[in-house]
Image 1 (cartoon, one colour):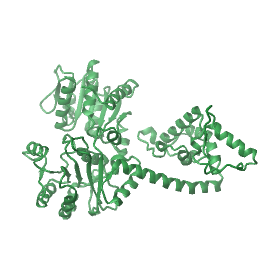
Image 2 (cartoon, rainbow, N blue to C red; image 1 turned 45 degrees about the vertical axis):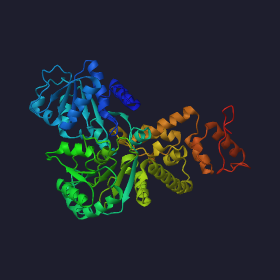
Image 3 (cartoon, rainbow, N blue to C red; image 1 turned 180 degrees about the horizontal axis):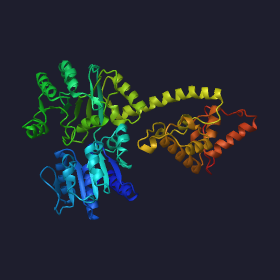
Image 4 (spheres, rainbow, N blue to C red; image 1 turned 45 degrees about the horizontal axis):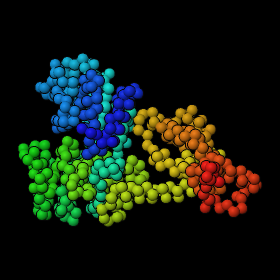
Length: 534
């Protein structure tokens, strides 16, 4: 089976991390991008090297999928470690194992601690739980790969307690741009559901309280869906089984052909097959279908289970992102949940890591009044934020000039060199979150950067790496940027060092006044044929 380019890159990156001594590494691929195929091929690589491999998952469906994909992609058969099935004494070198089974001390103690050479964890955003940690601690010398589609930055901070590195990340925007996933259009529904009385459980909204809060609005939601979903294949996520069943009945009263599935549905497989075959056009569920179910023809997702957990939100939306003939985009309906206490996930949460851009994007989508393509929306929000930052920066620079600072503010430097990756950087792993070290601060100050404004060791290191690289490339220094931009020149961070030096020398030779004929606001660096700047 031939891998896609990004899948082959991921496979190579994981091997490189292990070879470089990062024993526990993480792989992130969006839902629908074939993460199971990737770890199947990694499993094959490990087996070729003589390793015994354990695939861990928390649901039986995921274990069955992994075993099936590994067989189809590699020809390798798997033993099973689940309930009364055991891999002990099996000659198969790959085992699919249930976390709930292996976590038990009696079960673990049957294995030598070095029994498995490699452990691969499917849906690795669950790995923070004690059950996973117990298994990993027992097989402590095994190389570990965590595979997930949906870590948010909060998850990444937690996952940093388990994993040493992020081997590879393929983002949702990349997958859409390169044609591997469906474009997404978001439509905000101007219906405010009051969540102010909903309690919290395990860091998110209580499902029981949510179901009660939704009940009065179900008929109104169904009326709104008539405008958008009549000719679409729609999956609806709800907080409770009884709410899901009630909403199915409401939708059918509004002319839809709706079905409902839950963990106790005796005919679940038949209903899912009928939905796949277009017997129904709406499928309601109470969070049953977030993992381990694929129906590529789904072209509308309705999230009636508000959440502040980005990984959960991404799993729900991911049910509709796969490609399918005749499907040109996924429609995502977003409701204006009313809550005074918590920041909820919105469509922007799928594509934005920068909270500032996400808030602006959500605001823009709400004001649009029509479906908005997420890629276009994030571009517009980014441009809006840049404009706002430049306005704020102008005010900040005015204050800085009054204080006559000798050093350059990091924000001014980032804006001048147009470094979006620096201005939107969010630390993930433990060492990155720590405060900048004294050595880092001293080096930053030597470069001309005001170090007190740098809030983490990770940000300090990214700045220092960029400054080192700029020096090697012969670009302007921070001090040159400060001086020339204080005289009104624009985006000096993109100039060559020699160009900036020549201009500063001209200003110095003119009694520290701008030379005649030079308009700083309109001045642009010109590179001559021999490469010199003028």
